[in-house]
Image (tube, rainbow, N blue to C red; front, side):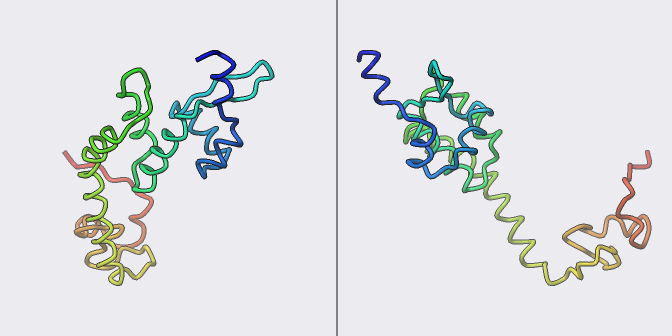
Length: 156
C-alpha cells in the first residue's frame, strides 16, 4: 500500500472519538498511558491507524468490567509487536481476569448484604462493622472513634 493510500486510512483524534464513543480527552489519556499510539503530522496533529478503533474498544470493554488501566496496559504489552488484540486475545485475557472479577463480585455482594448493619457514623462502636472494621479488629485494641486516624502496627 502506498504511503498516500495508507494516510487516507488514518483517523484524526476527532474521528476516532466519534467512531469509538470515547472522549478526545480519554484518547489522549490512553495514549499517555501507552494503550494506543499515533503518529504526528507535520502540523503536529495526531493520526491513528484504523486498527486503533479495535484497541480502544478492547480498552473500554475491559474498563467496563472493572479491569484497571494498568492491568489492561500490561495485557496489551504482552501482545507481539504491540498488535491489536483479536478475539482469541480477548478470550485468553478475560479468562485470566475472571478470578479477580469474581473476587470483586463477592466483595460487593458482602458489602450489599451487610450495608444495613452499618450505622454510617464511622465511630466503630458496633461489635462488627464489615465496612470499616471487619471482624471488629479495632475493638480488640481500643474503643471509640479515636481509632479512625490512628495507624496500628503489630506489637511484636
